[in-house]
Amino acid sequence: MIHETNYSIRTFHTDGFGHVNNSRHLELLEEARWQYAESIGLVKKLADRNLGFIIIDLRIRFRNPVFEGDQVKVKTCLKTLGTASGEVEQLMYKNGESKVALRSLFHFVLIDRESGDSIPIDGEIRELLTGVMEL
Image 1 (cartoon, helix red, strand yellow):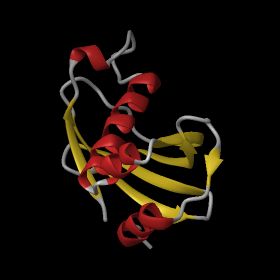
Image 2: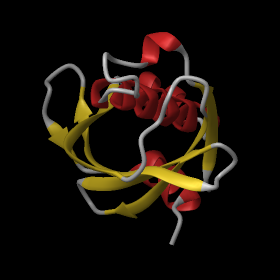
Image 3: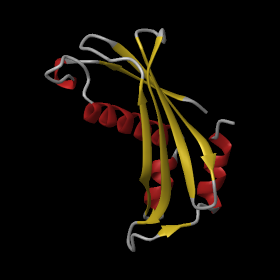
Image 4: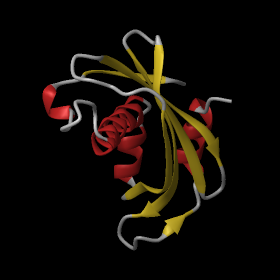
């Protein structure tokens, strides 16, 4: 399943160079991941079991600058799922999918929020994620 999140880039998203700063890109991508997780029911399942996902590695390839007034669309999908980690891919398109602004890959692990320990991705959560993974 691919989830789409749309943004209008505002003045506060931009820096002194007039484009969206890399730290703002991270915020936009994070919000899109949360919307994706909510849309598939993952946020509730995690909360019910006091679990969470944390990012352990990220890669972003910036391809085209994004400026104030641009309309961007972030497409988010789960690309890989192992026994203890997975990978989410996000593509940001600007102005009607005409140009890819960035491509990102986020590696995550599942943790027990009480202990902070990484735990296997299994049971209902694995079932849910397997059902939405893009191959």
